[in-house]
Image (cartoon, rainbow, N blue to C red; front, side):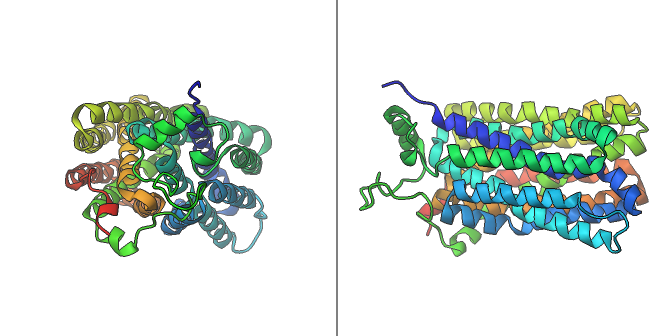
Length: 435
């Protein structure tokens, strides 16, 4: 029987959902200037709106991971995408003369963040069941390439819609795209390969031989076709006692701080600080995200290759240390370049270097998290989003007091700290072995 490739088709659709998620969250950074003008918001108040999304996103990472472990990624992701669509559309429904518009924006973006919190913990739960460990680097690289693609197409797409139809239409169209993508996911996906009719026996054997947790039917349990949802959950005391979990969470906090400078402020930085016009800002603002889209799967492929050659310590941790150290260097150099266009290229290099490490975070949490990979990765991702929430408000505050170069210097220091944190991580130590 020919080997099927169903796992890769579903990984591709997680890439699509990842791109849609970032379209829904980054669109406001492009429309932010128009929104601020319509509602009389300052940059600091706009930062509160950005931070509201990230606060909701951060606080619901762990619950989102638990829901994914409990009910499976198929249902949880479908429900999440419907939620995103509703609150993305509501962002554009605020009347121009509404009293308390700032509070409304903050509330809507907080709830949008809460809904989007499930995307990557649920994806990681899917990876832990569908992808053998030797392929997890490239699988996570593909999924997170959606971050770069979604964020990369957002500046030109949203700018075009804003110019021709107004900023509100950019949110309504984003909502429709998300709902369609979610419907396809619900039809195509299953929680585990044993439940999918398109998975051949050869593909199933490959998956089962290489994954780090077993379903009850593999282990000889009484349920011949048991659901992946709810199996093998770890106690939270086990998760929270793990030095591995805290180390990757600290590093991902630093990662999130750096990443969200690009998602929240880079377009505005190019337009208002570097003096680029709308068209040039939209073009150069795509460079970091294109670098992310290329470097994310590249980093995953390199990590898988080095893992097979030298083991997970080098393949996961070593790649992450190198990538985040290079990020620090690029940020320091880019902040000091006089030319706006050259600075954009150098800083984009920092974004690309950062995303070389992306798959390491998610591959390690899938490996060590066992039956609670959604919960473990959700807890880790909470750290990244708290970092993003801090940068959304702190970056303009530091820039106002000390200059924009100082904002990038702070990010460079945190990138270096994130590299150091990876030296603590032991990717071969599964939490399931330490109940």
